[in-house]
Each structure stands twice: as structure tokens, then as C-alpha cells.
Length: 353
Ligand SMILES: *Cc1c(COP(=O)(O)O)cnc(C)c1O
Image (spheres, rainbow, N blue to C red):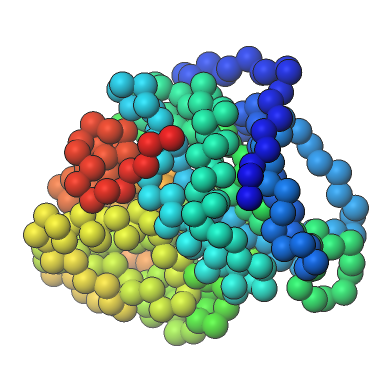
């Protein structure tokens, strides 16, 4: 399938790179492709970024049959633009699609669509340290129908947003509230899919944690409330007595690409990394024994977010003296180094646009 390109004749003024924030500014173009049962995926096109009209009976508004991805384009010192493991994002989009009864896409074609769009909006990839072009691919059901049924028609869209450095003032560990009232996901549900519903259910817990003075929640499993799952919308890692441990992906956690890269990177560096179930009780015991060395979240937005303080049922745990740990810093430096082309891409993770 050939992607048609219609360029805007009203290019917008580029924003101030010192004030990008996140997700508020959009580039000049977007990618769209339609699906119908008769034609399958068709009409891939890059067009000027603009609102689209939808009937209020559009299925996605009512039953949430929609999925998304998030990745970034990075500007290197030489002025090149590159993506980090985009094929993994498109493979995950298909995993999410299968769970939500959404037709899958051709992964290589979708990576190509991302590259073509980023190429058309290449000048929008910022170059200040830590900045990037955030890329949001998403698919949603577009039937005008209020029956509960998988939609027969869909749109696959990609929009892009230049975003500021996540850590303009350096990496500061955050305070985390271990959530013991609300749950994010259960096995058999949609926790492993990148779908809107997972975010909708997380808002209330996040809101209450913020009111208590915490920046994120640590999620426990939905069935027993004993096992650690994720932190906010990030995967979670702990270093206990020198061993790096992350909860195993058994259906209720989202398998992050930063999580995978962290595991692969640390193993290549000779660290012992274990994917297994981890009880919150084991964590508090390790803390009491002085063996909880580090704790951090991983995700595309921040790469690494160290946790400096955990609160579980009134017990406050200060981790690594509220400073970023050695392994957290190593992962951050290595991953960002590869993403921005400052370190050799030994794992073949980077793709030039
Ligand atoms: C997207 C996401 C992550 C992180 O995935 P990355 O591919 O590393 O960005 C982790 N948890 C949840 C719930 C997510 O939605």
C-alpha cells in the first residue's frame, strides 16, 4: 500500500524548545488509515493536522474499543532523527488489538508509516537536551452504532507532539503510595493491553494519592492485594541485595519496551535480573533487613523514575537515602545514550528516519 502525502500550505510556527511541556503542541501533519470489513485496512495517508468530525454515536465514545501506543523520535548531535525499537511498539499494538477485537495491522507497514510521518515533520523534532518528538499511534472503532459489539470500521491514526525534557532539573526520586484500596487490572482483563480503560480506572487512585502528597501509586494485584504489579503507568524494578527483580508479566501488567530494554541491558552488563512474582511483604522485609538497595519505574516518557519513598499501610520506607541509585543511573545513562546516539547501539535498537 502506498502512503499518499498531502502537505499543509499553512505550516505552524515552531514552539519555543525551552517550554514544550508534554502533549499540548501538535505538529503540522498526521497519519490516517481506515478499516472496513469489505476493504480491510485501506487509504493510508499523511494529511495536514486538523480536527475530524464524528457522530456522537461513534462506538469508541461509548464502549472504549480503542488502543494506543507511545514512542519517541530523538534528535542526535549530528542532526539525525532516530526511533527506539518501533517494531516492538507495533507488535504490542497488535497484541492490544487482539484483546479488544480490533483488526491487526501489518507491523512493518506501520513502522514505515511512523517513519514517513516523522520525516514529513522532521523539523518538529526538537534538539535541546532531553527533548524529543512524542509519537502517538492509536486505533479506535468508528461505527455509528450503540449496540455492544465490535465495531466494523476503524481508524488507525498517528499524531506527534514535541515534548520537553522530563527532567529539566535533574532526576529527583519520587514519593510513592502503595495502593491498597483500588486495583488497576486483573488476570483475564485488559491489564496487558495498552487501552484507554486502564487509564480511566487509574485516575481516582492517582488523584487520592496526590492529595496525600504522593506523586504516583504502586499497584498491587487485583486478586490478593499481595503482589506488586506496576507503578503508575510504568513498570517497576527493585534491587534487593544486589539482585534486580521485576514482576513477571502474567497478564495483568503492561509489558513495557523500556522494561524489556532494562532487562536486556542489565543482563548484558552481567547483573542478575529476575522476572518473578514479588510480594509487597517481601519488599518490606527486605527494607527492614537493610537489603532494599534501589527502586525505580521504567517507561518511554521518563525512561527511569527512581522511587525515594514508599508508603505502605502507614509504613514509610526511605530508599537509598532518597537518592538515585547506581543501577537506576546506569540504566538511565545507557538507554538515553543509545536513544540520542551518544553511545554505540550494540543491541541494534535504533532505527534512523
Ligand atoms: C505504556 C505503559 C508502560 C511503559 O511501556 P514503555 O513501552 O516502556 O513505554 C508501563 N505500564 C503501563 C500501564 C503503560 O501503559
